[in-house]
Image (cartoon, rainbow, N blue to C red; front, top):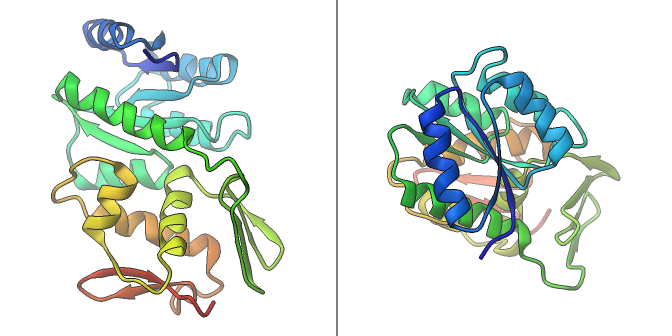
Length: 232
């Protein structure tokens, strides 16, 4: 049984009740909010392991809630899965760009939701037990502390950005397809959503590359995927 705490944020009572019931039966501790302002407050007060965040909320919408949580040092590392009735690609991309770790479109199956929650939480709990470090003259990465420095300047990455960088670095010199990255980082079948990888890579590059137009660390292999440059 799990003991992680999950904040469910949705203004539709029946959805909150359905999700909460299944989460509690799966062993999770559950807290709820039905508007954006309460969601931001509870994120700070309760420090949940994960937030299930609806997009259409009174007060602050899901985008604003996500932005507020990511911009606060006390809450910036909380996992966020967006739940929304909107399925347009632009909404999904915006959510991911604001720092959401995952995105599900209503209606969704409870089984899939629980699988995604488990996969996201499992990755945050994994640790090798000893510090693993990669460093060159320009980049320093402590994988266990999730710390990245570029030219001695600390770089703040979202969880997914760090996980992408980690898998690329640990497979440096190898070409990793978008499908492989989706499977390894998101932990479940994500057919047709390779744009998700491109969005995260673009924002990762903005943070670690001096010149985004001429990437030094992450190479794009056209039509295939990405590779970390081992000569960096």
